[in-house]
Image (spheres, rainbow, N blue to C red):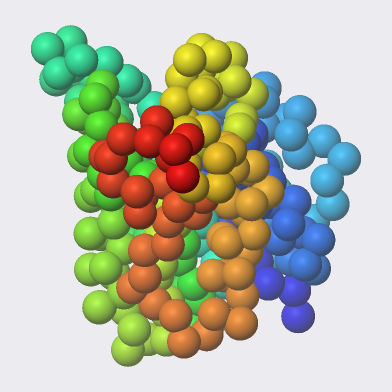
Length: 251
């Protein structure tokens, strides 16, 4: 029987790459995104998908997400909480409205989606994969709301894993490092790109498919004894701390 996954933030980037990999593995996917136009374009031509234009920060829409998925596919085996908002800026410029906007999607959304999907995940002894960020593991400038929300995702993952293991539900977290998305390449200056390359032991950005590989694995039966884990898929970025990357040139 085909596995059924919900992937939030599925219209682009990591979410879309994950959707395609889960389909390629023989699964069915409910693609959730609040950007209707992007979702329509992304889902066009894909088999075994259910596009749902919904906002994960709105409880009523999250309930609709679960109900529509079960009505279409009959079950939920995997929940990939990928939807996120990236708002960067200095601490002084982060007003409460911005803070709440980031928290509503990045943290509240994961709480709402997981809670709503729990009855179905209990039936299938399913898996949850939450997408945090390297910014949840190491502090950085301009990320007071974003980084804090992602740190919350990491702790929420551990809480869920601790409480849901008795139902056979596994909950893990992926922390992507810098990923070569269209958006990142559009906003990162050559200096920023070079700085990232210098700071990452593998000396490059990751790809959307490389993140999706890890997500697909954690959803799969191959990860049947893995829960409560935080996996940095970052080319070694987190391991290097805040040293002096320029000194690597002298090695």
